[in-house]
Image (cartoon, rainbow, N blue to C red; front, side, top):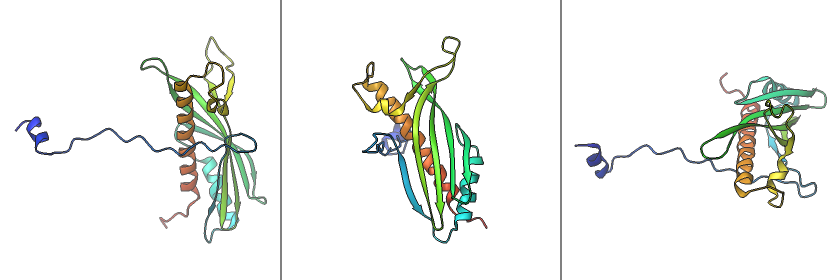
Length: 183
């Protein structure tokens, strides 16, 4: 029996991967700045252990991202750095063009918990011969439909990339901060 007959009998065909469900972009009501933050309980983990895990996260290569450590204060339980992620933005037709998405990552640790904060998001085009020093665009700009030259598609594409990067970073941080169960 051919493949059409097999389909008629109910065999399954592989489908395209589902589009990930993305959380809304959190905007601080007072400052109108995008800010992903949460306090995560970590039972029986000391500040020193959590600080070590946070420092290790900053030293570990991330998918499509470069991580730059800026501040590490063990006594204060604070690790701060900048993450630069390469992203592909849809253009006209099937063309993709590359941008970078920057953000600040702050990890504060105390006995039994840590707090992550992702802020200061902005987009930047890659330098080129025509634009050796491209300008930056704060991510909040892509939440405002009244900005000149802002199309719904452009707004949606930038928001989606921001959501995907934030989701990837928060999952990566959560994975690094949990106890290593392989021992």
